[in-house]
Each structure stands twice: as structure tokens, then as C-alpha cells.
Amino acid sequence: MNARLITRIAKSLLLARWKQTLVAAIGVTFSITMFIALLSFMNGLNGLLDGLVLNRTAHVRLFNDIKPNQRQPVNESKEFRGSYNFIRSVKSSGGRQEIYNSGAIMQALKKDNRVLGCAPKITTQVFFNDGAVNISGVINGIDVQAESDLFHFRDYVVEGDALAIKTAPNSIILGKGLASKLLANIGDVVQVATPKQDRFSLKVVGFFQSGIGEFDKVQSYASLGTAQKILGKSSEYVTDIQVKLRDLNMAPPAAREYHQLFGVDVEDIQTANAQFETGSFIRTLISYAVGVTLLIVAGFGIYNILNMMIYEKMDSIAILKATGFAGIDVNRIFLLIALSIGFFGGILGLLFGFLLSSIIDRIPFTTAALPTIKTYPIDYNLAFYFIGSIFSLLTTYLAGWAPSRKASRVDPVIIIRGK
Image 1 (cartoon, rainbow, N blue to C red):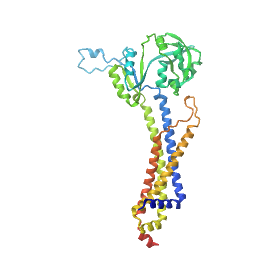
Image 2: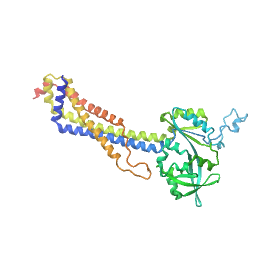
Image 3: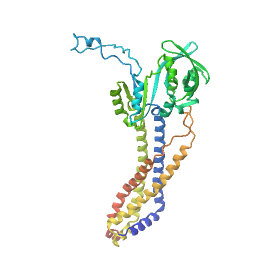
Image 4: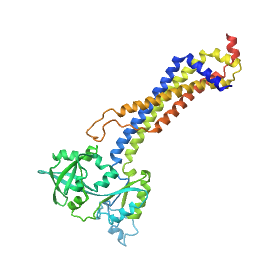
């Protein structure tokens, strides 16, 4: 049958019950709008929460872990060499935390095409003297420029200048929580004691706030040179090498390769932060489940409306079939009605979803825990709009399939005879 004629008949049936058609289209529009807004907001929130840790974490970390010596005297004894030896309370070996040949390792890493960049780091436990009280903390000696370029360090310095620890000798940036404990302000001098009871005076040049309260209560940052001076080490002393890859998914195989190549302990980001990936997956799954549920509810509305339309238009269907329309033509008419509702409702839903996401993106959101965030996070991913449009057409097609199939099987003789 002529496609133009089928389209005109479908249009006439739609307009004949325009109120019900409008209700069905509004249902699809509302579902798609909430689907887009919900996914955009939840994925923006996922990016924010994961970024608090993942953006600050190396994709691959090279270090020397403190662990028990595998070579125990009893295992070396000829008398017990062929036996199973159970040893309790094994103490850690006196291995050094320094990475040997750190300069050569970093040069080799920079030549690796998978590596975006690497940054050296020194981590050491210290005590901050506050009168008669010693507050335990951690000083991270960093290359501030590399740390800012690769791990956004500068974005989390809420007061002062991140580069000041590089230019000002014997300077330190305190975590916001640690500074509150010490009642320290920028320009103050804090006293630091090492585990060996060596004491140093460091000038506060800034405050750091990551958004994780427990982290900010113990962490502080200084230059590599300052950290080496505190520990009494040479300029080659480094305890960690942080590697950022071009592709995050390459971290596990790269870590295994670096472990074998450089003979150091290696940890990849997936192993270190598996709980964050799990949380993101669950939140995204919930978002999709709610969005799809809304679309299914809208589909049931379209199904009911088309069913009612078929019962009310039995005479029209009988006349169509009596004048030469085949069952497949009637099927196409009602499927076209359902898809038209899904198409126009979906288009409006995508538009209103984008507008609602934009409104949410402009709502002020300020909290002391997240100093770098000013508005609610939104992810404008085109994939959400593509999925929403596919779901709107698929849902309405499935909703219209059963009613259209029923309409195609109407026997015109029975309907006309009954009249």
C-alpha cells in the first residue's frame, strides 16, 4: 500500500484522539528528560568522587615495600632443608626504602610510549611539635611542577602558592586539617621532628585540601630537596616513582612489566582503588535501572492508549480492510502511530533533559570539603542522549507491537455484520 496514504491515515487517527496522544507523548518526554538528567548528574557525581582519589593517584607506583625476609636461617640449614618449616613472628628485614638508580629508571620510563609522565616522591613519617604535644603526620617531598602537571596538585592548594615550596627554602604546605590542629597560619614556622629525633623549622607557605578529611589531617608537602634535608639523605634519594599512563587500563600489565624490569615493588591504580571503581559501577547501574524503569512505565501508557484506540476504531479498521487494506498495512499504521509518539516525545525529552542538566549545572554547590567545586557536577556525555533516543523508539515500538498485531487480525465481516 502507498506509504504516503498510510502516513496520512496514521496522522488522522493520532489527531482524532489528540488528548490521549498528548498524554502518551508527555509520558515519553518526561521519562527521557529524567533519564538524561539522572545519568548526567550521577556520572558527573561519579567523576567528582573518583577524581578526589583517582586524579591524585599514580596509575603505577614504584616503591620498595617493607616485608619479611624470605631467606630465614632455618630454611638455609641442611638439617631442615627438605622439611616444611613454620616460623612465627617473622620480623621485617632491614631493607632500605630508597629506590636504587631512580634517575635511570625515570629516564627509561619517559622513553616508554605508554607513559604520559612520571614524578619522583619521598614519603616520611614525622612529628609536628605543638608545645608539649607531638602530632604525627606525613611529609611528602615532591617535584611540585610534575605533581601539578600530572596529578593536579596545584588545584588542591586552597591558600598560598603551590610553587612556593620550590622557590622558598625550608618551606611546607600543610593539609587544612593538620593546620587547624597546629593553629598555623601562612607565614608561621612549625617545628618538625623526625623518628630519629632530628628537629627542623619549616615555614608554612600554603594550605592543601583534598576533600578527604582524614587525609588532610596528617598530610603535608615540601620540595624534594627539603624532604631529603630532613632525612639527611643525598639528592638522589627517592622512595617512590609515580607513573601516569596515557591509557588507565594499561596499568596492570605495565605494573607487572616494570616489576620484572626494575626489580622493585609495583602497585597499579586498579588494585589500589578497586573500591572506588565498584562504587562508580553500582551508582551508574542504579541510574540506568531507574531511567529504563521510567521508559517502561511510559511504554505501558502507550500500550493502553493504543489498545483503547483500537477498540474505539474497530469500524474504521473494518472499513480499511474492506476497501483493500491488508492486515500488514493496518499493522504498519498503528506501529507508525506508536513510533511517532516515541519520536516526537523523545526529541522533546532530549531537549528538556539537556535544559534540566544545564540548570542543575548552574546551581551553586559550595562545601568546605570540596573547595574546587562551585556547582553541582554534570557529565554532558553524548552517549546518554544516543541511548535515550534508542530507548524511546524501542520502548514505543514494543508498546505498539501487540495492539497493532491485534488490529491487523480484525475480521471486517464480523465487525460490519455486528453493526
